[in-house]
Length: 296
Image (cartoon, rainbow, N blue to C red; front, side, top):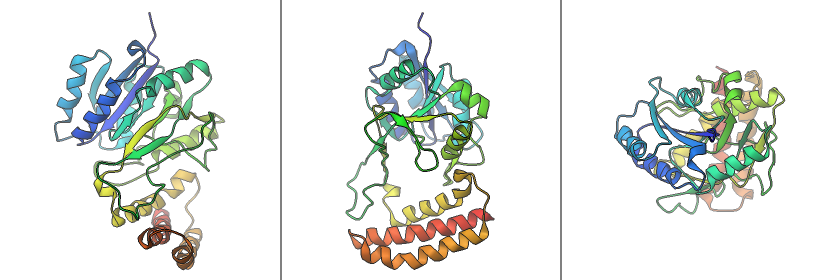
């Protein structure tokens, strides 16, 4: 009998079409299906999410569907690992598409490196509509090189759309901090980084595996100057939690002053379209104001 090695958790909220695309990519995986399961966690969706997930459950023995009534991505992710039947728990966003060998590469890695407890991989972006010329070329991507290596947590990160943890590790640490992260339509960040920092603080290595490949959607609402600045602001709010340091009013004010003073240099010295340079300058300012908001 083959033991269940891996549970892949897909947390979702009111995005039935994107969820369908994600589950379709997981349906087409080349890995041996008795070694893994796909678990969809529905966080109070009001659309046809349940029927979309049920379509796969009815035709595949290794697909499951559960609901989480407490609103918030962290609650859903915690529900996922608590209900997981696999030794390891992997996460992919509902607006991502997995490479056909994604699960195979994950299982190969945990079989080859039996002491690994936390790891993740790169992701590239995909879009439904063409991106404007000013859009930041680095946005929506993660690439830490072509070699398997340890991640220097605090300076670099793995992210929620392509990460895997040993279930026992999540249980020991209590999983994701439910005061952080997205909740319904509310924009918030930090729950992944906060967990990774706790893991690193325990002296547990976090690895990067470039063979685990997914693509993550940049949807229409993110192709907006306003949305990107709003995102920078909310990243700033969660700065203190992400870096595990005590909020500091003086430091926050200094960051704002520095970002404002550097803005002209960013605009006039960087190459690229004017709107992109303006975004880089303003995003630093919005991030710094977010830091200040996070103090309170």
